[in-house]
Length: 308
Image (cartoon, helix red, strand yellow):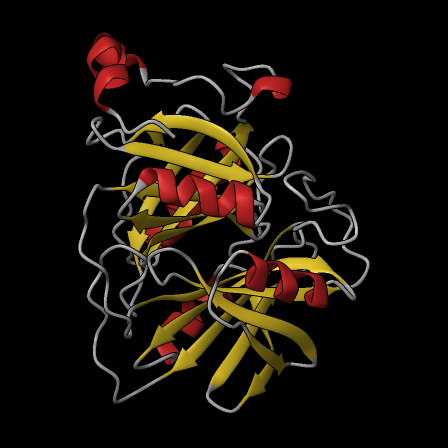
């Protein structure tokens, strides 16, 4: 069994408009844009990162905003809902804030004994805010969101699958334990994690398969401390029969990827070197940062990328 995984590192999704995406995460959710860079494979598309002050693993939501991308169709084989942790008693603030921002009415939920509200992003992305007591992380405050309501980071992510058994076995191999079940949803958690340590699997045996597009989660990343731990995880996965990519340098972390039995793309990312490797913490996300191989494109990209 793998013992190196600490919980979520980041979640990466697709969007259709960079400016709308940036405004939603900074002006509505009050998160900090911690990095403005480009897609390694398609440098004419942004890669935007949002999180807490320093981009702590377990707080970071990232996006590839492809201009005019068709909207995804929800279904199985994907992450259906990305959940953020907020302080106890803050949901009334968020419901009023969403109303003031002209968003459609948010839905109140109470699953696994937790109060939450579900809402959608600009591309109908599925999100929830879940009240959590004694979350030790410090949320980023600004844009009208104070300490009593600030998002602390991820609470969990929920996957929609036709058959949960094989993916549940994979999570168990990755160090997660089944801790609860409610209806067709099974909850897993990794002990001693980074507080973004819960994965839910919703079983929908007759649902259509998802059509990925704007608003869809592209992949979900799990955190390990360093490259040595990542190599141990990679070997364990490959020894079990998974097809895992070589280690890829993503500038702010090293990454490996593999496809799960349920169809969801998993990444395992290192906590090192972090988002301050090329910017001072006080100025994260301000300048356009380019991977070395794309630096020669800077002049053209600064002219053609949509202003945020």
